[in-house]
Image (cartoon, rainbow, N blue to C red; front, side, top):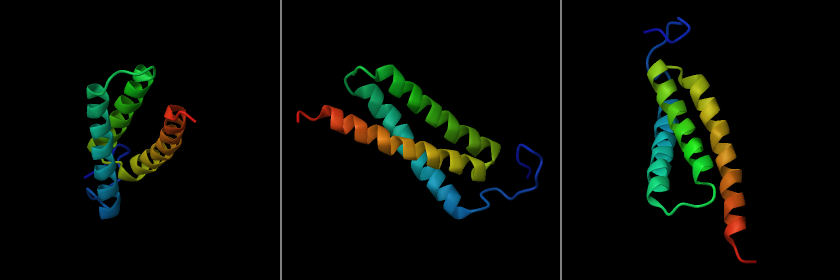
Amino acid sequence: MKNIWGDKVTPYNNPGLKMYGLVTMGYHVGGLITHLIEPRRNDFLEMMLHHIVAFYLFFGYYLSNIWRIGTVVAFLHDIADITANLTKSISETRY
């Protein structure tokens, strides 16, 4: 099997990458679904764009079989989620 650049690789060449990718993909798909169900806030469009881009990232590297690059980008994306959620939780408090 070849990846997008023509390098010969085996599918799912690292089980840890596969597990991390699938778990975080499930987290982001769940976030997309709950974002559509919850009442709309001021940042609805920005967060919708965030969830769609995250889903596109996971779906793209899963189909292209480029797990190494995709999981690094997903990890950086998850670091940004930490700061975004921290900022949102601070802004929602009354004190």
